[in-house]
Image 1 (cartoon, protein in one colour):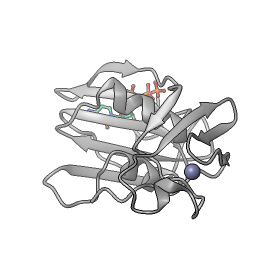
Image 2: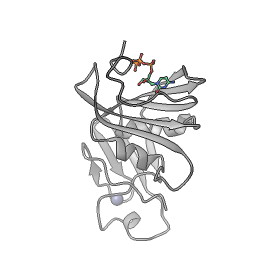
Image 3: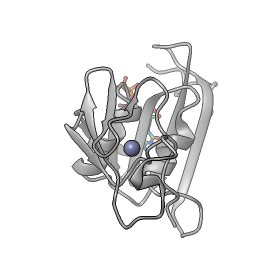
Image 4: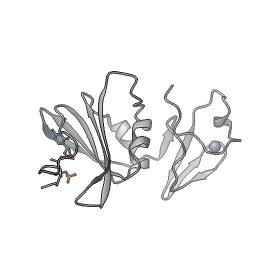
Length: 156
Ligand code: CTP
Ligand code: ZN
């Protein structure tokens, strides 16, 4: 049983929605950015950062009430959170666990860190990265991004 279930409960259970669990510690804000969650709509979101985990020492966790992530959203998440588990919760129970599959291409979600890249210069070109085994390659400038994921496009 997870230590979130006993007296160490750190983040409340949700009724219906999605729990993104086992996010590498420090990555929760990137997960929120990828999902376009910036607190400006009515979504109820709980974020736990550096909570203790029985599997890894520390993890981040994101709980979104009232929203079930689509498989596309789950796939894009895999780029920054390959070890995350996605739990769809219905009526307080985990109804489905979605697998995280690395996509081959990520479009329009991440921004290229190369300041000279055409996608970084207000051109009406959406970003496009090819996902490699150990990083991503910008389709426009060929910049390779590994380990450090590029900053997220502002969800504006
Ligand atoms: N959870 C939640 N609200 C619910 C049900 C579950 O927030 N109503 C959270 C749990 O706290 C846990 C995650 O969803 O962080 C997955 O739940 P569960 O599958 O019950 O836990 P584990 O078996 O520990 O998960 P795993 O398969 O990842 O080990
Ligand atoms: Zn580029």
